[in-house]
Length: 393
Image 1 (cartoon, helix red, strand yellow):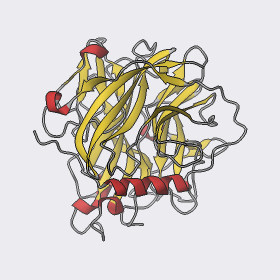
Image 2 (cartoon, helix red, strand yellow; image 1 turned 45 degrees about the horizontal axis):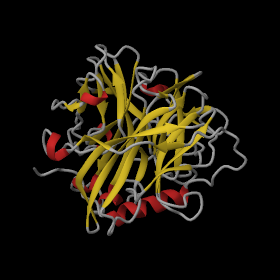
Image 3 (cartoon, one colour; image 1 turned 90 degrees about the vertical axis):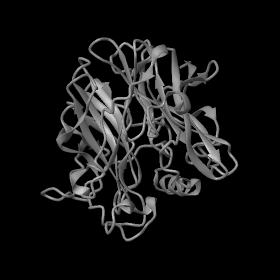
């Protein structure tokens, strides 16, 4: 079987990571949020192997795993590529890939249509039938003749976080009528030559005063690159999401192809210590602390080795120092000679109290992808695995 996924040159991803890290703010000092170290407990177990479980060549793990219970109590887990399919089962031990595509973009050459390629990256449901979702949407200008002055994937890559919805328990998703949740305040033709936009939203979590997620941005003049915290009163309302500006949740990153045009002077305050997108957010039930898991490349300072890290917070705005969970080269490292990389971490507690698995007890599972490297090329041979972890706040 030929597995389809972008075979990106590893050094390109490493350059992106270096740029993102350089733009991110320094680790906040004096943070007193409680720590919740996460320790691996047990061997990895394969959840999905494309050589055995794929429906076609599009099925590879390419985003952090997101799970919810549908209206019948079945588990749906999304972690695949832009031909979005779900793993389903009565429980986490019986998950199998459902070959029905729940969402795909049309590959439209019109950037204002927001219909090129999209990965479902977050879901939220109250009843298991009506599902709100956030998608990582890529307008890949290099694939559309005349749309990018350059030919390189990264130089033409323009990202937007979009809203999707399902009315049938996640069997099908559709774009919202006005789908833009967070966008670069300029059209895709502006600033070509580097990756631009908002991308890789975390899962959605419920706090005391609303619903939250974290999305990353590469930034622009006046806006730092890094991780931005968003809040809404209703995950089903795309226009309700607002980013934290350092004082309140006031910033709406609107459609640059709409009217009126966005104001690029309205910016979010990026939050440390995240040098790359946040894989998942969960609330630790015994302590009340928020736990973020993410990947990081070794930098000789906050991240002494490459691998998966966690940080904790009481309010989602200020975070403690990162703590290593698992060492290993990640998608943001130079892959040459690595053999395998690890990426797309997320924490899921199968005994979570909520339908959306946004809470965890003292035991959970770390889901992540293992990617095979051929020389210096990151291949599409990648497995979704899970590994038991213990939380010891």
